[in-house]
Length: 353
Ligand SMILES: [Zn+2]
Ligand SMILES: [Zn+2]
Image 1 (cartoon, rainbow, N blue to C red):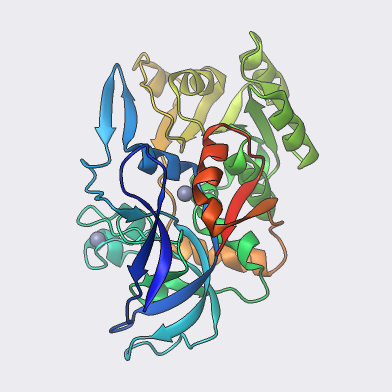
Image 2 (image 1 turned 60 degrees about the vertical axis):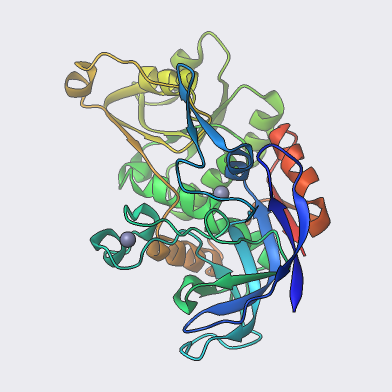
């Protein structure tokens, strides 16, 4: 038996339609028929094959151990077709959302539930293992399948990446989000998800920062307290005016030299910056500011399985509004990726095989 996959066979070249062998699940593996696969911004980096480290330096995907051909797609919802003999919970016909950020499963990091940060072996679905731009996908263990419940597959699929990424990043600010607005740089798909997730977490509110007027308007329509033009000369003053003497929490969903500099100029004493965006660039900043301003800059990479479970529970309780999704056919995978790359997308594109 074979099924259709859309694969990266060469970096920065159109995705190729390939007939792949459909695997038979072994052990506690689960074979899913893909019902929805989100098209994520990080798929563009994987497709291009490089990250920009600034000053002309690049990190290639080959350095990260990613090999071609690769079926991308890490925001997956699906229906169980069959399971291996050791699976006890999942049964044919069940609908689920997949946790894709797998590690070795055995090291101390994985044992404490942070497989997404495993230093031994990254096995992320759609990055290292075949992903959801396909009719079928194999999940290495049933414990990575979370019941969909009443959730819609296309609306829930993005929770596996943009959802859990923003949830995990906002979690790092701790209780600060209940008292102070979070400044969110970048009002694209991730920015909209962040507004919704922050609301579901009972946060005080979001101040969006973006250069694109249309995206700022959409952020306001989605309930942002304010939207600031990142390109305006007074952007920092505006952030300080709208917060109490400067931002306590800045979530940088873009991750360029200019956005991190804007973030560092906007935080007040004790302020925290969490960087999620992967556009690339570098940071040069006086070290004395770290102690004198008690400032923190840290990164956040996707999220953990427990965090995705918590987020799916918030969605099932009706606390998390679904983001706007646009459904596309599987054979539009490459066109969808190009639309996202061109910056023409508000909300999320989801492939429906
Ligand atoms: Zn993603
Ligand atoms: Zn591990």
